[in-house]
Length: 166
Image 1 (cartoon, one colour):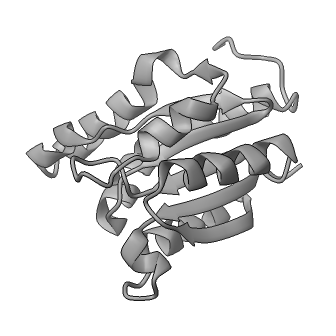
Image 2: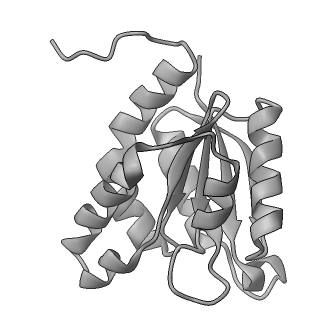
């Protein structure tokens, strides 16, 4: 069974049609190359309630096994993706360890990676992970956690029950 992925880009400028969604496209490219299926892709404004509502609908309707967001994880006054994510997640993902791994991977390329506020969590049987807003950072950081994300989703959705290494 293919893992179904929803991709959400948090960008008020992109939502207004004034900016191309290169990061969302990069996520789609990576997940499709990994054998996953993109079932939802949308640009949304940097609005906490809107982001939370759309992610909750996707998870609650079982539209996707994995929601990947891009954008809205920095220090801008409008950046609210981590807050929207934590608003709807029932289970936080190990105090941001996926974010820590992504920041560590990106730190090889830029010290600014330490400023990411990315969050991750679970709602029902859907894993939600915030990725950075730039296509280059998406590629660098998501590659670091991709294999583990796939395994986590397989466990969450019952596709596998084995977590121990041999």
